Figure 1 (spheres, one colour):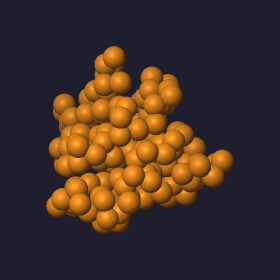
Figure 2 (cartoon, rainbow, N blue to C red):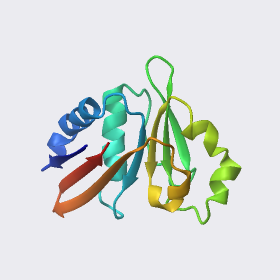
Figure 3 (cartoon, rainbow, N blue to C red):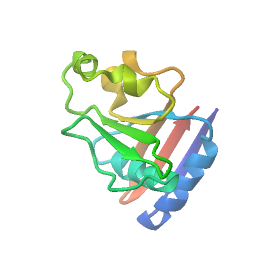
Length: 140
C-alpha cells in the first residue's frame, strides 16, 4: 500500500504528522529517503512530538543515534546515517539492539545501510516540490 501526504507550509506539519501516525498505525520501523534539506529531520521531530516524546528531539547527525523517551518510558530511536562510511560502523554501534526491538525506529539516509534494514520496514521518501512545500510518499 502506498499513500502520499502533502505539506504546503510549516503550519501543516503537526497535522501531517498526525495523519502519518494514523495511516501507519501498527508500524514501528521507518526508513527515510530524500536529499539534504528535504525535511526528513523536521518531519521526524513532528512525528515524535505527536507520539508523545518528552524532551528535546534533535538530529543525531554526529552521534548517529538519539533516544527519545515517550511518556510511558518507552524509547524512540532516531538514526541519521549521513556520516557513516561503512555499515561496519553500525555493527560496532550494536545496531541490532535498536533495529530489532519493538520500539519506534526512524532511520534517515537509510540507503546507506539498505542491507541492514529491519523487515518489515515502512519506506518514506520526502521531496521538496516548491519552496517550503513537501511531498511525503509512504510505502507500507
